[in-house]
Amino acid sequence: MEASVHTCNATPADAGIISRIIERSIRVGCALDHRNHPQTVAAWTQNQTHEHIQRWLTDQRLYLNVALLQDKPVGVAMASNDGQVAFCYVLPEWFRRGAGQALVRDLEGWLVGHGLRHARLNSTRTGEAFYRRLGYQTHAETLTVAGLAAIPMHKALPEV
Picture 1 (cartoon, rainbow, N blue to C red):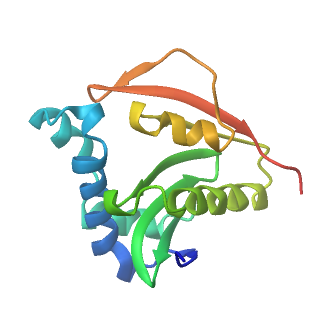
Picture 2: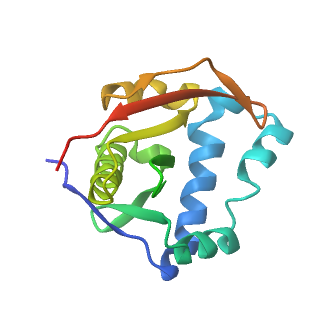
């Protein structure tokens, strides 16, 4: 039986592992989107450094969480207090084990706790079906961001 996923608030001590999770998830898990094009990968990963993550962790407008499976960090997600889900990354070897879903549900709970009624995000092609399963719907035409297709999606959040 698979161990349950646990989410927790990210801390400054997590910045290094968060950076590694994001980079590996982008390079391996999102290859369908960037097709291993070096400039696209570089543009996508340039602000995922330890230093950037440290700044995010001290920004009171942001919430970063980490998914633990078997007490091992396997995913990370971030949202802002204006309702934007910035990202959800899971290590490719841990895909489809509930970590991404747990991360997004936790972000949504944080957003509801801040009085928000809707969440929005820009999904990659890789993530689109995942977000649809979680109740997100496309609400605008696909954009191009840093050479990648970005699918604007949103979801109504439950009332408190």
